[in-house]
Length: 463
Picture (cartoon, rainbow, N blue to C red):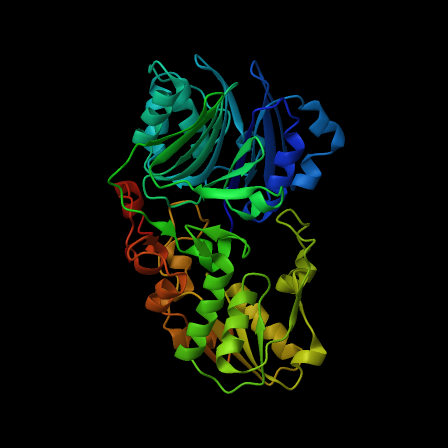
C-alpha cells in the first residue's frame, strides 16, 4: 500500500515570505508523497513556482525558497503518482494561465472518469504536458466559459467523479475544496493573521497553528482579502472518508474528522488482541504504522511490547535499486531485526496490512533467520480484497493475495506460524466515526463513486 499526495496552502493578510512556512508544512506531509515536491507563491500580480523530483530537502534550499519571495499567498504539494508517470511534467502545483489570471493547482486523490474527460479536452484542441488526472482537472478550469474562477471550479468538480482534496491558488485567493464524499482529508487552521489549508493536522502543528475545523465533504472554502467564505456545493452527498487514512496513510499525530489517528490505531490493536489471542513472549510492531496497533495489542493481551525491528529512515522511494546479484536483500534494506530481542522468542508481529504478501513474507523470514522460535502475524486491517480507484496505489485484484487465498493459505505462503486479520466490524468500531461515514471499498467492494464500465470490464473488480 503506497502513499498518494499531500496539499498545503497559506493565505496571509501581511506581505509575508510564506515559502519557508509552506516548506515546513510539506516536510510534515512528506510521508504522503516522496516522488516530487513543489511550491508556488502569489504576490497579488503574479505566481512564482519551483518544482522538482525527490524529497523536499532535495528539491528546495535556502536560495530557492528566497527566490520565491515575496508573496502573501502560497501553496505546495508532495506527490506519489497514482495516475500518470513519475516525471517532472506531472509534479505539482500545476501552474496555468487562464482568463481568470494565473492559477496554481494542487490535488490529492484520483478521478475515475479521467479518460473520458481527457478525450473531450483533446477534441476541443487542448494539449497536455503531462499524464496526470490533475492536469485534466486544471485544464477544465482554464477552458471554462464561466464568468468567475469560483464557478469554473464548480463546473470542474461537477464533471470530475472520484476523490479530490484540492488547494487552488490564484494571484489573490486561496481556495480549498473537498470532494462530495470526503474521501480524502482536508482541514483549516489559523496562525495569527494567516489561514492554512492542509491535508493533515500534523502539518498545522509544525508551524504552531491551531486547528479550526475539518473542511466538510462537498465544501469549497475561499480565502481572500474580505475573509473566509464557505460554500457547500454538494449538500446531499454521503460522507465516505478513506478508512486507510486511519490504518496506514496518515501520521499518527494527526486528527481526522475529530478522531485521533493514534488512538484509533491503538484501539485496532486492542480489538485484534481480543479477537485473536496467541501464546507469545513479546509483541513487536512493523515500523512505523504498525507500532500504535502493537502497543494496543500489548495493553490488551498483557504480553510485553518491545522494539524488534529497526527501520532505516533514510531510504525513500528514490533509493538505488540493488543489483540482480543482491536483489534478495529485499526488505533488509529498510528493516533489520534486533537479534538479541527476538532470538528464541515466540513473537506476535503487528503490521497494518498485507497487499501482495511479498514484504510480509520477507519480514517473517528475517525474524526467523534472527532466531525467532515462532512468528505469529497479526494484521490491524481486514483483508484487502479489491483495488482502490480513489487515489491509493493498490495493484489489480489478481495481485491482491487475500482475494485469491484463504487466510490459512496466506499464512502458509508467508511461512508464519499463524495469521489473523482485524474484522471490518472491529475496524469501524475502532475508528469510531458516525455509522456509514467510511469508505471500505478495498475491503468489501462497495465503491461509493460509480465506476466507469471500462474499469469494471478490466476484470479488476469482479473475478
